[in-house]
Image (cartoon, rainbow, N blue to C red):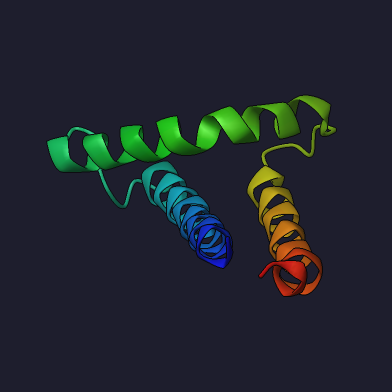
Amino acid sequence: MRAVLDIILIILDLYIWLLIASAILSWLIAFNVVNTRNQFVAAVAEFLYRITEPVLAPIRSFMPSLGGLDISPIILILIIMFIERVITYYIYPSVF
């Protein structure tokens, strides 16, 4: 059972890194540093969008509008870190 919890923790860590990569890539695209006409950039952007958007969309729906600032990835990272701490401190020690 601890192996399953370890895999869940690894997946949550990986998802945090995907959120960070998605945010950085969206900034690079917005400031025209990288161009989405490049097939590789477009493929990576589409992959990151499809992976992160289903989880970010519900957070964006109840967030107030802050102009052009989107803090939903930060809120999701904090939620994921809270889940990791709950697993690490409360669930993991009680599992054989």
